Image (cartoon, rainbow, N blue to C red):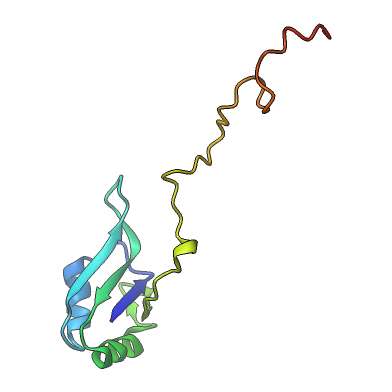
Length: 116
């Protein structure tokens, strides 16, 4: 089962998180999500446990636990439906509309109108 763990202290390491969950059973993987530019923790991560009953026991007992002064959130991770994922790879949402002219779709040649 894939488990979401949120509101983590920024100082927690993957080994510490693994240890907390291994108290309930085998852990396949632990991943704390980090900022790709700074490398700093984003305060959440995922734990993969192969045994669903052990994973559920970990969720039940660790959800709401206090870790380094922070109350953590632990629940079953559900994948987002494909339509809800944010992807900007082929979608320009910036301010540059690349239409030329004065920011409209009519083009940029206003000099030949004769209405100035």
